[in-house]
Image (tube, rainbow, N blue to C red; front, side, top):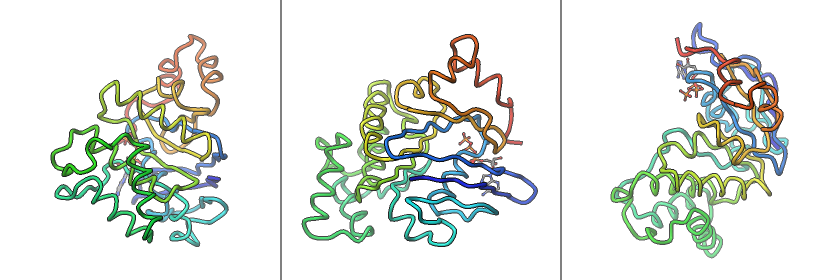
Length: 241
Ligand SMILES: Nc1ncnc2c1ncn2[C@@H]1O[C@H](COP(=O)(O)OP(=O)(O)OP(=O)(O)O)[C@@H](O)[C@H]1O
């Protein structure tokens, strides 16, 4: 469902993503790990059709993001790193607005908004204005937005960032559940999320994949039973420069 083929991105002289290739099938949750500046967000922005690659391509359900970015976008739910929200709207109003932008109307729109509110546990704040929400609820509102059109593919950039431990647990469970019927790519800095939510994980460093395996395989590879040890072994301390 997600096929990334030799994807590269150059910003001036900086190579942010360097000939990356991987795929995610339906029923798979792929954890996308790597130090700050490894190229995770840049890869996700290209895979969702929001940033044109310097070379290579990504296909969403067989649709090229280079040749048909708008068609590919319709198949994807995307939670960007800093997702935009309209503070003066209520949660329900914001989701209805996003559904309009997605081209949903009538009962399809009502059902989509209701389902997203339920899935992301937003019922209690549905009619509250976004500016009054805690960070966790704001975050879940962004996540709900990405689910409105019931996409086959979900691309989530640090979906648990800034959440408290209870909310982190809830969102991980949600990702796991959604992953049963969709293809999910999500980035995280929290290595325990690999075991908690992923069927597979890749570690990227300086725009390249340096490890790829199931959580059990990666833990075995570490030699110490610790994903943190493996992560530290295969990644560079400072990749942002
Ligand atoms: N628009 C841009 N212009 C120039 N350089 C950029 C741009 N966007 C990203 N970069 C650079 O590309 C590299 C990869 O950045 P990216 O945000 O993809 O990393 P990341 O793995 O998502 O990092 P983090 O974990 O900190 O979010 C970094 O060196 C970053 O400074």
